[in-house]
Amino acid sequence: MLELRAVSVRYGPRAVVRSVSLDLPAGSWLAVIGPNGAGKSSLLKAVAGLVAHDGEVLVGGRPLGGLTSRERARAVAYAPQTPELPDRLTVTDYVLLGRTPHLPPLARERRSDLVVVEQVLSRLDLSTLADRPLRTLSGGERQRAVLARVLAQQAGLLLLDEPTTGLDIGHAQALLELVDRLRTEEGATVVSTLHDLTLSAQYADRLLLLDGGRVAAAGSPAEVLTRETVERHYEARVEVLHTAAGNVVITPTRHPATPAGDLR
Image 1 (cartoon, rainbow, N blue to C red):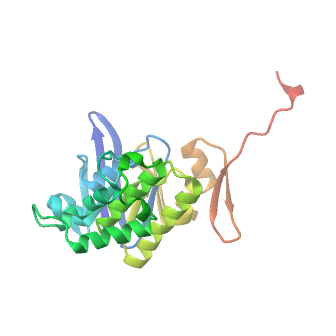
Image 2 (cartoon, rainbow, N blue to C red; image 1 turned 90 degrees about the vertical axis):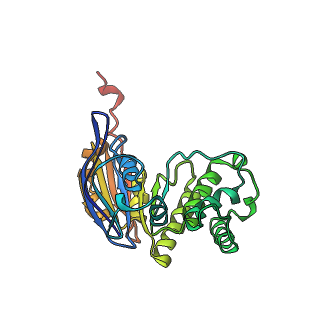
Image 3 (spheres, rainbow, N blue to C red; image 1 turned 45 degrees about the horizontal axis):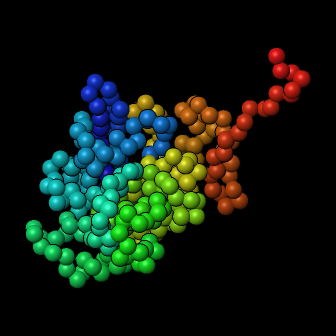
């Protein structure tokens, strides 16, 4: 579904993504992880065609640069980490924007488009907020509205930049469960950035660890999230635990406390 060939991104003289290559089969979930400033969001923007880059991005075997804007929007849906939401639009109006790539030029939405939007709002528990202006929503409700717009686009590749930002753990889990169901039931391919390593390990089947814009590790969660790897690239002290269900949990640990009498 997605292939990157030596993709690099530069902002002026500074390289923020350095020669990243990967091959992601359809129906997979890739979580891009790494410390702050590692190049995660820039890599997603390159895949979405939003920033200039070197190398090649192929979606469904077709070079991204060779697609028209309409073809690209039908193939790739992108949810930024901090979206700009037009305050005057209602939730329904905003989610309907996701149907734009499927409409003929200058045409209005059809009944079939409204049905798609209604279904997406229902799946994200937004039906009761359908007529609310975006400016009246809480942070978590706004995040779900952004995801609803992305899902209404019905693209085969979903790019989600920190989709759980601002969500409490319950809403974060509910949102990721929904994304995973869509991936399983509808064959969507997901690429997300996530700061939470435990959530990354439990939902994504592949991880790509970036550090300084370069690929530091790639593979299954068990292969990537070793104590040595996490401590080296995050400069943190952690324990890597496994629950009874086999889920990976990354937990920070403190240095042993120094007895008061030993202070110098």
